[in-house]
Image 1: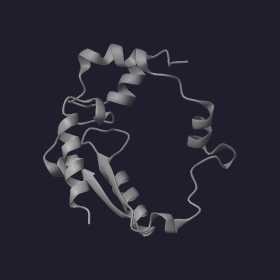
Image 2: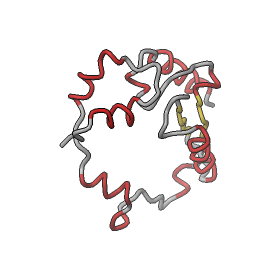
Image 3: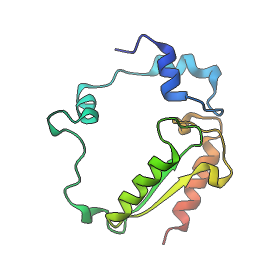
Length: 132
């Protein structure tokens, strides 16, 4: 079941993005599905359902990119940077790709749907190619 408040969805998923194709929001909104009970349990850690890393060594040497747009209200730069630091503590070769540092401004949470998704994908490809 969808949230009856379409504007809630717009604020949550598009937020202050200047790159989301607003002309397509109605179509995008109609494509959304409700959140499963399992995901709600995971996000609220009901019955210890939240993600738990049991083998920290599994991250050792793994290249991981955390990509953050400058207009993503749910993922402020500092929060995603802390996630990268956490991954590095487990031995990952994690890197925070904050799009503003690459000269890319205005992306929100739904980067893959935004007008410059190819530009962001190319930056990720550059990162992949630069990994040893």
